[in-house]
Length: 151
Image 1 (tube, rainbow, N blue to C red):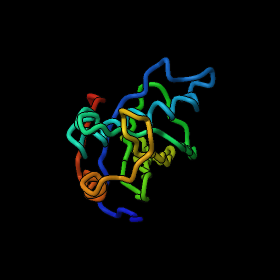
Image 2 (cartoon, rainbow, N blue to C red; image 1 turned 30 degrees about the horizontal axis):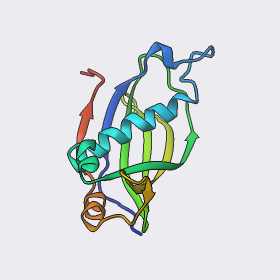
Image 3 (cartoon, rainbow, N blue to C red; image 1 turned 90 degrees about the vertical axis):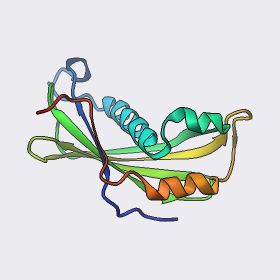
Image 4 (spheres, one colour; image 1 turned 45 degrees about the horizontal axis):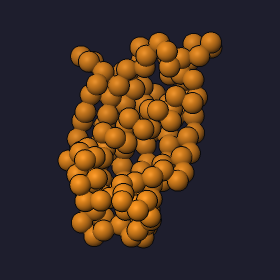
């Protein structure tokens, strides 16, 4: 049960037109997508890639996702997700994400996503293996990944 205070992984992406609603801001349900793509980048940075988990007959399933909004994001904004490993339990772990407007640092939203570790072949919950726990504890401090094409 650790709270990681290391620098976060930073993942940048651009808001697309189709992610916005009639009010001209990112539609609230799209933040689940933003969390998902950000977590996938985090997993890639921490474990090498997702297939490495699957090759060990391991996988994760989301059991909780909470999002809190602070300010709107709009079409063509570059957002920066800052991701850290949060609580690591016996069978589950939580990742904490904060979303910022890249250009001015405006805090947009934060999210906590909790995954449970499962054995892929049986779809059954299991204790987080020690080597996976160590990788989660190490995290990906200072890693920057960009899909935004920002200058």
